[in-house]
Length: 270
Ligand code: YH5
Image (cartoon, rainbow, N blue to C red; front, side, top):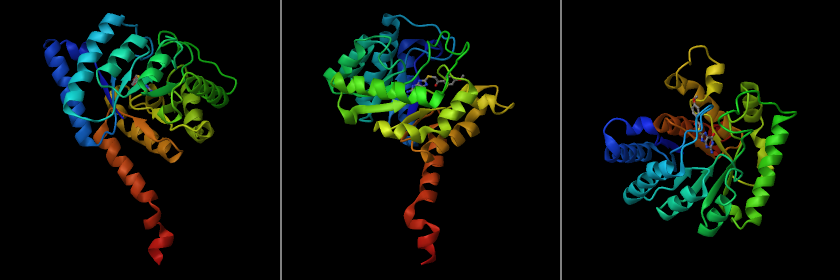
């Protein structure tokens, strides 16, 4: 899954038309580089980020969804917690709603997804983006994240979202210390009992900086991002949410070739 942020930065240098064209060009590059899903977000959910209004988020995201849909049939997910943005995105050609609040910020979002027969990514977060990194505390982070995802998964099924449309995500960096994040990554396989594909987003996150003094800026975090993504796949994740699609796809193809049964040592000797 390749990440497209449609935030004020990408609007500042040349007006709205150019911002849309840039986002579309970025999406087409990611598709050529090997993305299987494009994730479009208009509200930053970084630690401390301020919310954007409904009008602003619609204005940022919907034209980009429509423009990418005109050029490609790739599955599009939209990173939003708002039911109205979800509805307009699905009407505009999106396939999946990526909701970092798991339906807890806007109770109408899950019914909207169910009505459209769309995909839904259920992510765990402790708190809200404004304050989640202030002092995250868990008794047992793996158990707590697992039981939250299990219960929201059940809620989505009961609300009419089909089983095969749901994806679960431990929410790396969302109300978690580096230690919590490492513990979750090491225990991703424990989420498999829920019975949904697992998505992991660790690309360029603060966890990488916490492990390497030379990774202060986001662009210096590629090596750590790749290592964590490959580890997540080995532990049972099916989807990795990344900024650097070409490098991630290459790393993934290499990992999968090395894990391939038919080229295993055992077979190769015969
Ligand atoms: C995710 O994990 N993450 S937005 C801070 C960074 C770098 C990246 C300080 N949306 C996820 O990517 N959706 C985001 O540097 C997400 N899973 C899902 N499903 C945060 C982000 C980032 C934040």
